Length: 261
Image (cartoon, rainbow, N blue to C red; front, side):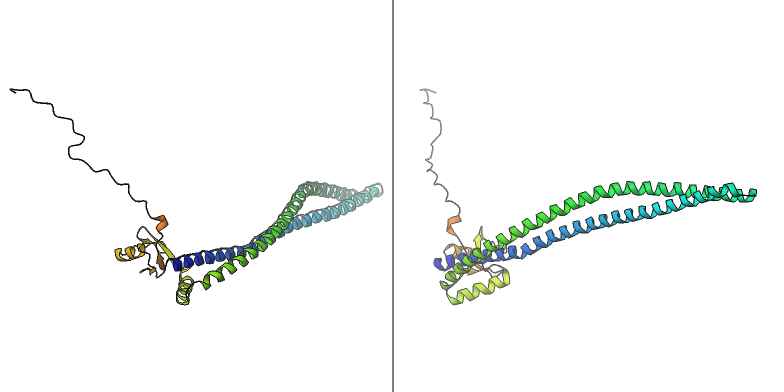
């Protein structure tokens, strides 16, 4: 029975380690996906800043054309001032010249504001491009690390599979089928009994079950149905024997009574 218990405990340890490796393997693609998403976000942000910068440059080109057009228009009206014949014509020309001057001033203010925005956007573009490079490097490192870890997992899993098959061959088919059924349903098929409890479900054990387990039997938990075993290696140390108490020991000796007292 002890050999059976040891093999079942060993098999469960192997199965738990295989499950841990499987969960870790499933998490590796998520790490790569997260690094790819971070890089894609930085690239989108950098592209957005670059587009805004291009729009500002195109806007300033348009403003410069409009400013140049108003300057040419104002110059033509100034040239006509020497040929006007009536006060009304002079007033109209002055009005057009003043309007052109106001538009030139307004457009120049817009151009200045655009230059200020461009300066900010150039700084933002520099930062976002640096961030893209940083995330690209992080993605490359993540891919290298996950690839290396995947190879390590494959090697570990191969060794565990070999050990698993070896242990399973040493367990009787009935016990093995029972263990497999419990492991599939409960996650673990065998649990340690400790402090008169099942460590699988933390439910207390009846005194009779507890005593039978301490005698080396392999039983089932009444609550969760897992196989139960007791490990004498973790039993509490026996109490040290106490010295026998001699009646009267430790008392102060009586004083002799005086004669005639």
